[in-house]
Image (cartoon, rainbow, N blue to C red; front, side):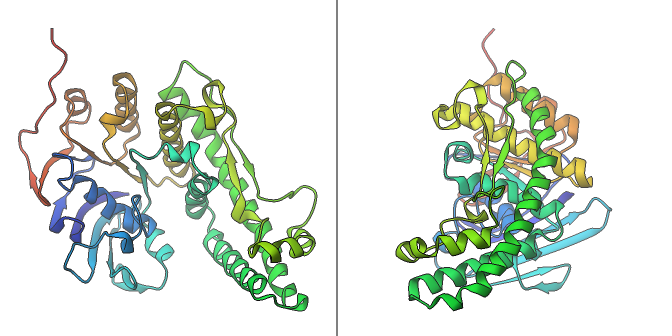
Length: 371
């Protein structure tokens, strides 16, 4: 996939922005708060249905406007020209892909794979299970064609069961929904196991490239219930009394987690913020490579304030990895690093100031070390 043009309207401080992108991608440079991260957020919105900094209703729409709009033009890996657009008011939305209306955000995201690394990505490692589960589900969504449908059916059945629990409904009303949850749970977990099998070798490879002085941990899946011991439908029946008291379903694949073992020799929860960011970056790189190896599709990488998040050695390794594997990247920062400009010379450079974006011929370059 190669993003050719991105059009953003009324997104945070961006009033009306249009950027043309070369195959290597672009740097967006400027002061903090100028709007450079918002451009990455806009691309993320098309690829995920939400920004990595929150939902549309949380303040993404430019003040005084009823909605925001994002339109992307790209060429897919079969060299077909594609276009997708989203108009979102925070409460309702309208999306189109190649001129045809879509009814779900997953339909919008399916042909537009993007991945994000940002200052809070350490939460992917040290945060709640939902963060790691979402990362695995991104890959499952793109490599397992039934994953979206299975996930939707499971979520619907789970919501119905939770509503019955809170309403104090009689037992006979639970049977159909618990049976549906049980069937979809098996399919959902099987898809996640399959995606994890694709992810593991890519994770080990990314780890070796980024941190060659340490051994990659073996990652696994905690399915969210004792899957090897009991069918989920049976456990739901056994747990029904307790779940009634709590008002929600306590077991199932909605509580699954990706087990990261002991990266860098300690439990994930004990990693420093900097260490957790490195592990998170490995996961993002692994997601991208797993998708490429599985389908030949290259995701667009959105790297927010990358230089500030890495030491010089890791930064050099990431740039080398990007260049060698041919990924298109959108990177934000206060200025372009000299080494980055040398390694990725064909990237466009845009200066962002007060929500306005201007292409630069001579990009601002951070000074190198004194000689």
